[in-house]
Length: 298
Image (tube, rainbow, N blue to C red; front, side):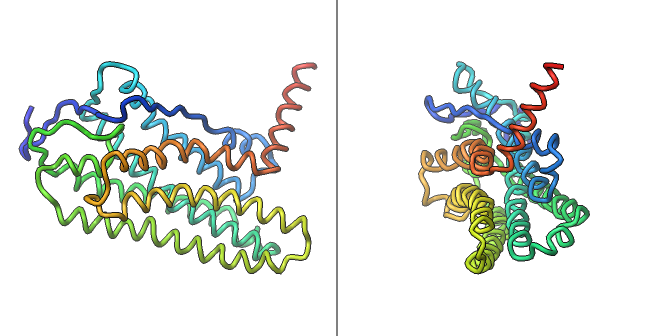
């Protein structure tokens, strides 16, 4: 049925990729952080929330994507498209802020080790996490409202593998300067500002690490910070390229590739990066498995 702004309230057709499905694995860190008392620290509090975000992020996209790739029906309901669009924006924006908070946590751990537990007390960690979630929710509400108001003039084909903002904007039959300005402003708030804060934090961390004389502490600082930097580079790099570059300067296939990378590949790799490079997590997994085997023998 045609709506008042010329948009169809019926199913959308997801064009997606021809045959490039990507499967997901996530997220042992949440369980390990909950079960092992030694990992109940601010770092693992944020890390378990990051894993939960990544799990929700990919879960909101992958099932429908695989159904469309493997089946003959390439459609998604209008309500499903709206929900997919909203949660992708909400979770993506929340992760942008959370990665910046995690950089501050690493700064406090490396540069202020004696006052770390005082600085990163549980109340502060919970407040910072709440700000991340509320910030992501607010940006998602604004962008969803503006994007879904655009008239589509009967267009139903979403040239992507899920309902993402650039693809939905391209379906519109009018050009909206308001959305362009809002996207640029939110891009500064959720991308450029967090990246700048992360770079400043790691600049200070680098100076502190260079002064560390203990090789064990030096290696530990590099391991924990290296994992976070790798995740930051993968996630922010593709997001900034996707959202801060003029849309008319990017081909549709190029946009699909970068979208696939930051929505599925990067969230899938995040827990692997942290667990493979983190001795604490690997030790916690061994303790839990040993306890499970020991209990089974009793």
